[in-house]
Amino acid sequence: MTTGGVTRYVRFTQGGRTSYGIREGATIRELEGDLFANPRPTGRTASVSAVKLEVPVDPLRVKKVIGVAGNWNMPDRPPRVPGAHPRVFAKFATGLVPHEAEVEQPPECKQLHHQAELVVVIGRQGRYISREEANDYIFGVTVGNDVSDETYYGEPDGVKNPGRIISKACDTWAPLGTDIVAGLDYHDLGIEARLDGEVVSKGRTSEMLYGVEKVVSAMSHYLTLMPGDLFYMGSPPWYPGKRDMFAGQTIECEIEGIGVLRNKIVAMKNVIPDPWWKKEEAKVTA
Image 1 (cartoon, rainbow, N blue to C red):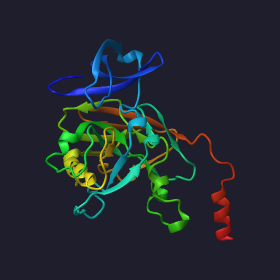
Image 2: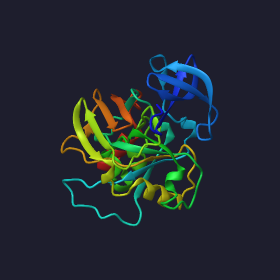
Image 3: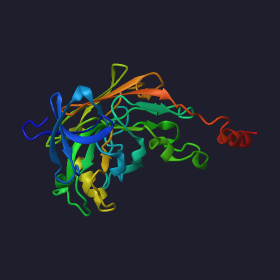
Image 4: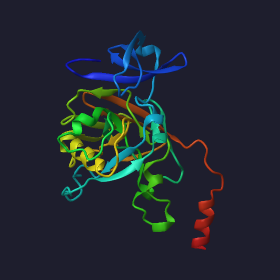
């Protein structure tokens, strides 16, 4: 929807063909060409109810998925003092799934966590970007869920654990909302997570320790940012005892002015029978 300078970009499939478009209420105006290089209207339209809304950026176009760790103060922990650089980690584009898709829980991941987050979509290639220039490189924002597992994140058993890739970057662990919203002031938006309808996390983007401009600028000094790169900006505080998700539950992430992202948690469909790591654990403990 284009209203007051705000435009909502979507990616949709109809009749076996996937296209970009601009959502205007219940109608999508189809676009052709590169989403990040002045795409052209085709003149064709589609009804939102008649299409499948996909992840709004083609995962094959996404070169980097970067997450910001510890970007909020938590009420049950000592306040953090921001350092010179945000703490970051990587997820993978293979983890991107759309609204209403399933999120898989591997059997060894016992502490699967929700993290409703503002996601920044980069629209221009750049490096050594100043904070003042950062907004010129941002295409828009959307809502995401940085699904994570605490079982291995802190590597409590050192080299016996598989590392943080497994705790952050599994397939289906980067759900992304349907709309990229361009032209929206994202500096003070409400964020909320609901698990089976119960509010379990809540905050505002103005409470982030590292704002969007600082993160984009800082990372651009180490990594060349490319159109389609994604920044998951961190999760607001969760309510005590309300962070774990389990198969059969539904998680909703909502950001004011952007929309709702809803996904169901399911058990991993194809579990390795008699996994090798269980045999190795048995040898160590024998």
